[in-house]
Amino acid sequence: MKSFDEVLRDAEVAHGHLCAGQVLGVRLAMLGLELLGIDDPHGKDRKRLITFVEIDRCATDAVAVVTGCRLGKRALKFRDWGKVAATFVDVDSGRAVRICARESSKTLARQMHPEVENKNQQQMLAYREMPSGDLFSVQWVKVTLPPEELPGYKGERIVCAECGEGINFQREVRQNGRVLCRSCAGERYYEVLS
Ligand SMILES: [Zn+2]
Ligand SMILES: [Zn+2]
Image 1 (cartoon, helix red, strand yellow):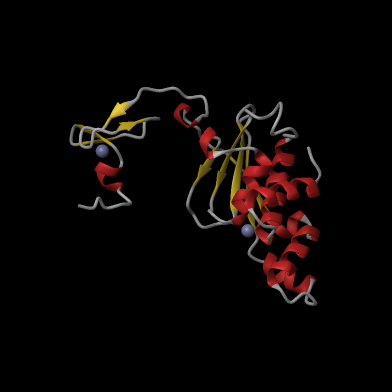
Image 2: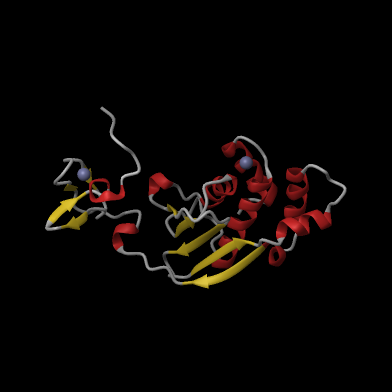
């Protein structure tokens, strides 16, 4: 495993800037890997890990860099809950740990470095120094991963009876005896124009 500073530099490059979210995300992901005993996520352990992230902000980019889990590899799962939290699943052992940034960490950062006026600078400094226990809450959890959630899954491709578009990974919905995509079944996030 690379050092904290090396990983933080990688995160900065991937994310485009250095920010408190990068420091937080790197620490969060490194803690997750440490607790699971995964020390080479880009090498020999690269197929061992699935990560769920709960927010689409700065820290999430850092989590992806540290773990090597990517959306396009189906190893990074997004649950849009608006929380600075992630769950790390060791596919080999079945063990999983969920780590969430403590709400109190911002106040603590202010108390640790009242001399730093810029909030981002203040948090970057404090999040580096703060003991893990002050920064994060940790829960051991159980995550049930059906085969279609795993990276290597090769399933049947289904065609939506309404729009004719192909659907992978059993994301189809059965409604009144018809097989539909989630969009045609009513979960549409867009409106078709013209
Ligand atoms: Zn950022
Ligand atoms: Zn459809």
